[in-house]
Length: 288
Image 1: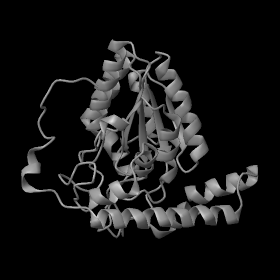
Image 2: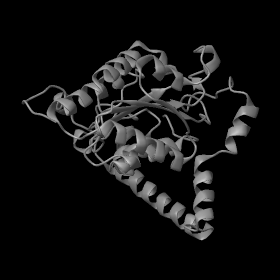
Image 3: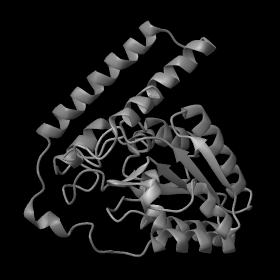
Image 4: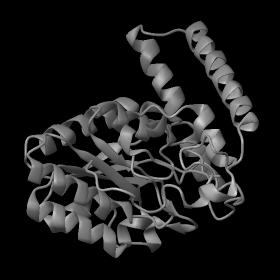
């Protein structure tokens, strides 16, 4: 199980900036983007339980899910593999003359893979309507950034491809939204791709089996003070849009939605054997 704890602002910020017909190829900690795109807690929990009512209909688990009708490309475990896919979709948009944009990203470790660089280079040369992002949560599994690359900021990679690179506070949902809005507008106007580095911190191990003993405790304590949800609540309070009672009400509503989703998932049926081949191979030509 891979959670978004400590990184919630990134997926919420960029997904909120996109239009309905745009497409995302998300990072595996981007659960907020799935929810904004219309995936319900029940569907997501059914996916984790391998039920027929999950997006992959029981053929896969955890965050390996997507839905073309909702503009979400299924995530794969090989980080950065979705970047060339998103780039190809952006090429199709440009060829068709559509004003649609793709938004795709990976973690800091994924930016050292070849497919990351191939996608960035091709998109920049063709001026494709795609926005790339890096969810820089300081660690590629257990490897700190200083042992991954010789540069201080991942955004510096953008210079090699002739595209703008911007460093963004990944724990500030408003900053993520505004930076994403600018990059999306640039892509939609035909000015090509942008690379956004969202600086944040993974507040737990790579997945739930990982105790993350390799992360200094003082580093986690430092980032705990920058929690994106608390930061968003403080901002809303300052602007006069929220109060403690209102946030408590939202929290209770979310709990009920999750509990209802869990009940739905647990009561949903498992797939039958013959269903294993459904949706695996293309059965008819179509376009997206």
